[in-house]
Image 1: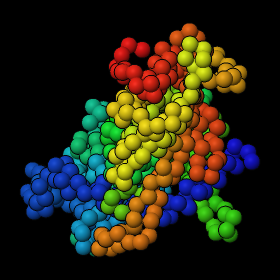
Image 2: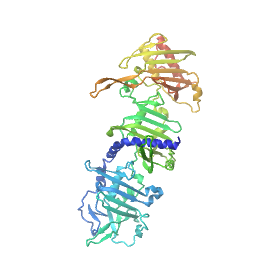
Image 3: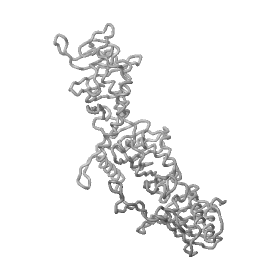
Image 4: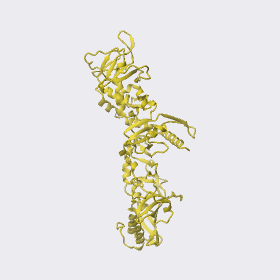
Length: 595
């Protein structure tokens, strides 16, 4: 299958998954828009439709008095807006698709909530502050002066067009069907306002109907709102979100890079096993690289994904892809042309970084999947991200995604083993002492509360001192990975040889009773964690360093194969195998002795 076919299949799957999260999306919009009324009151004057008229200015048909100012047309409350459509030829330089665009409004009378959406692209989340500016600009169009009551030559104001195709205009439609059409011309010489005219039909006091031909200068505040929203690049109206706002409960995490430098994935550890089995406060177990456990730094860093947003939304997807899946169901979704992605360093056949995680969206009581492609660091000093959640391309500050530059050890725990001694059912140490092979297997007796009760040394044929065994386990527990091995190291040739030291840790199956609705245990047993054999192998490649690999063998006896690219100090390995013999010989030692 080609890269493009793979990509389309991935996007199709994503769209099908998203159909199940429409409730979550609706709730997200409600959360994002909750601050509308607060922002609105801060941006607009106190409403007083009966305010006095400016001195010496009489109202023309179609105009309205509002709060001591004069409007191009009667004030429109946001809940009464239906659609606002913009035709702006200036956006041709940014792409033909942005010449005609618009925003639709909806209002929930029961909740007294209104929200907006990009017409035909309602997947894109709008920025609430920008949306408020937008609504105020079209709902309260204050002008500072009427330059001509009846204009015969609009060209001095940039309002003379051969056709509407060349014009910049705004169509404002209310829920009652009323439509206002505003043409936007040049700015005044001081740059404080736009010249506009309103092409509405009006009827004067004598019953004569005509199209308004007055020319106005918008007030500076209104002009500012126009410039920031209606006349701006449409993606600037969009929220900079890259993923769904979620709670801190993650169910999966994966990050990979095209150069193979990063290949990290984690799954959560059951709350039942977090503290008692894996020590500390580790909340996740690593899937890749297998056998390592997540560090506190990683657990802290992923909290940023609760509300993950960039600096600016650059583009939104406008290419509609439709088809039928293998089950015969129709699907459709919006996508970017490859050329658009490539412009931001997001070549779909060679994505620099890929991030995907699933996390709980508490308000919807379900998990949502977030997927993001990242470019490399671009010459302008930013990363660019393609959000598959919102089908947008977002500019990202490097400080927000510093994890893209992390090494593998920044994601995982630097300790080679991170588990409770009460979770280790069998421990085997196999190496050499002064060139002589030495091997011992300890079989642990574990109580139902995961407390170590005894340790039997198989080759010795008797129980060993528990304190000595605990000290050995602590020594293993605190052995750390020092860093990554040299890139030019022949990994395959090295691992074909005999390990300098091999440690096997076998863990039991962990099960719990399933509870009923009342919280009582039932007869049904559920596996929390399966039985796993973890084989740590160390291959010496210099006087002081040894490569460490991990192989996982599951309950069915299936192997994951060796994986690893970190080194451990040889002196530490020598101490581990010597102290294994010390445990069996009853010789005192300390885990904190010099390696």
